[in-house]
Image (cartoon, one colour):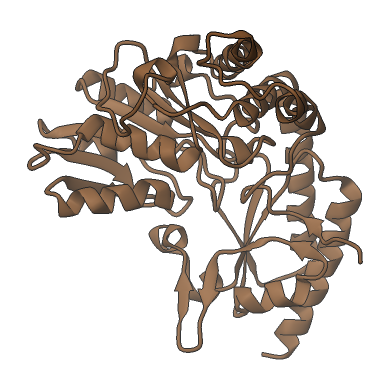
Length: 381
């Protein structure tokens, strides 16, 4: 059976063939522990060091500022708990946005139960925070500001430079989750002015279960895990050499092909947007039109439930819903709620996210399939 057209790259990406090739040696032959002093540890140790250089090159930092982790969730947790620690929490304050990923929101909810004050800054109708709204919440108790670089649902890119400048002027640490942004838009840590930045391998054509956290040199974080001295003493545990090698190669490819990938994905995303607009009347696009990821298109179809749309197109297109429809109610995503999207549209929201393997023929097919499904479902209302 023919596989559906894959338009869910923001959920996860397939492994790049070059990444698989780079990893193969460490699956089949080089099994040694990079901490070992004997011959079997030499090549794995070199491979981890090379991967660290590749990651550092992509984001414009020093090699010793890259800490390998198990993925974006761990990196986000480390940034948050590394700053706050696990004691003397009462009175500390953290500022974040209302549209963060659960890997940020859930640790913050836990800290709230421990006495930390968390402020969730609102966003505008395009899903963007304003530096002014962040500024108004800063006080002498604020120890961390964390705002995602781009939103995973609607693709809006946040004004990171402005917010990080505010944090720096008040001597507050600033973290950004760039899991969705790397490989799709430039993310130079010096240009962004961030203190910490999260990377997730499986959003970048690398394996699942590997990621990294950039920590600016000079920042001392509390340890979250305790064990041996791997990762410069900041993240104990024997390194996932195969995954790290894959992440390093993926970062090298992302840096090499960034400009062309941005151009191609934007062209195809705009083609999808125009095609749906030409075919359908009662639709609404979510997110910022210009300040957005080049691959992401969040579309709301008026008066039709997202689950029904995915059921109708599921054999032909893989995409994600922005609302979950249950037997007695419809749960709209926290992102659409924060953007104050009209409920009659929010409940029918689908996210199409393109990748480097998406082509024009697939986009044209998707336009036909989705348009036909929406017209059919609309006639049944």
